[in-house]
Each structure stands twice: as C-alpha cells, then as structure tokens.
Length: 294
Image (tube, rainbow, N blue to C red; front, top):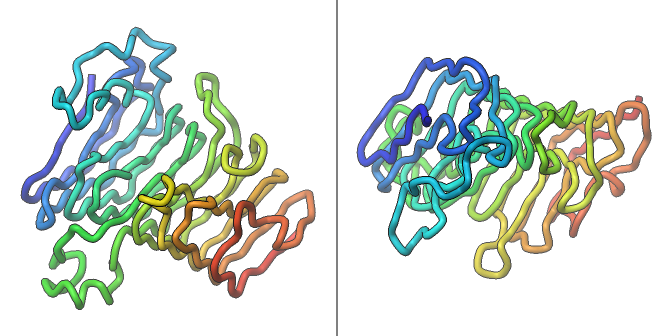
C-alpha cells in the first residue's frame, strides 16, 4: 500500500497527514511526490511518518511487484521504494517543497527528494535513524519562479532571492541508533548533483559506523563521476554535534565545489582538530568554523 504517488503537472498542496504505525509491506512506501514541468509546484506540508518502515527483505516484497513506469527509460523504477520514507522522481522539474515533515527510521534513505533537474526545498523537517541518508537531495535549473515562495515571477530576481536553487533549511537530523532492520550505514545530509544550499540545520550523531564515503558523517557530497559531479553546494549557519569519532563533513572526489562557512562543530567526549573532522578531498572554502570539544 502507498499513501500517495503524485507527479504534478500544475499545482498541488498535500497537507496535514499522519501515518499511524510502521509501514510493513515493503513496496511503494508512504509518499512519492514531485513536480513534473518547470512551471509546476508541489507543496508537501506537515506530514508525520515517525513510525518508519521495514526493509523490503523483511516483508513479502520480492521486488517483482508492479512497476510505476513500464517504459524502457526506467526499467527497474519503483520496485523497492518501500524502504524509503519520502521519495521524489527521476524526471522531476519545477519546484517541490517539503515542509515540517516528521520522519522516523526508514531503512534506505529517510527523506529522498533527489531526482530530475528541478528545485527541491526541504524546510523545517525532523528526521532520524534511517539507513543511508536522513536527507538526500540534488539541484537543477529547470524551474520557474513561484510567486508565494520567491516573492516574484522574474527568474533573475528569484535567482538572487532566498531560494536560488535546491535548499535544505531549518532541519534537525538525529542519528543515535541503528534500529533493527536497518542495514545501511546511517549518514546525515547528502548533497548530490546540481546547485544546492544548506542553512540553519542541526545534525547530531551519537551512533556511527566508520568514516569515509561509506561511513557516518554530518554533511557530505557524492558525485556520479565527470558527467554529474556533486554541487556546487554551500553549507552555512549550521551545527554538527558528534558524540562519536567520525567525520563532520565528507567531500567526495567527484565534487564540483563545496563551500562551508559559519559552522559550529561540537565533539562530545573526544577531541579533534578541524583537519581531522573534514574527510575526503576537503572543501573548496572553509570559513568561520568553530570546533568545541567537551
């Protein structure tokens, strides 16, 4: 069973939904929502999925169920999304806004709007203890201004406004355990291809499995090689609290650019310098970063 699968050509608002209990069918998880054309907009606001879901291997799902798209473009599309809380669409364009979502432990990414070439905005969400990334996003330029969001219908003005591309803002991410049935190492916020901004977020980690690309980190990038590098991305005005010895930031070798400024990193119960806290190839610009050790 799936709560809603909506690919929006036009405008849609999806609000005030509470999913009771744990999703246990293993296929077609609670929400798949995305805007379909550059001038489309989808708003998902105040959805509670704190019960999480089971991994498909722990359910009746054999990955042979009906596909959403039988066409040759996406031959395996939609077969195992039961392991993910919120998903986007690989052909997303326009603007998709996810606000005030509460999302508990899903085995394979918790809030996962990544896909397509439009703008994805994740705002005011609280997510925790999923496998893979708690929030996983990408950016793109195939979107038109939305008057109620951008305050203008002029693209040039919108590009200089508060939402010039994909944005993750005012979110709280917590990793403090690996629940039974979660098989992938947990990560905080993962940024992939396209322009993105992260601001005013809090990431707290008190459970970690290793470091590096496959380990646990607060903020990270992942590119897909030369054709789809991660970013360019900016992380600003955010806090990372590490109760475990792991990376605050991990930068993939396939990253266009990552700039980090006005960040506070707290290490609780252990000490580390800034160089130790940034893994991978390092950031392009690191400014006004405070490290506190308790």
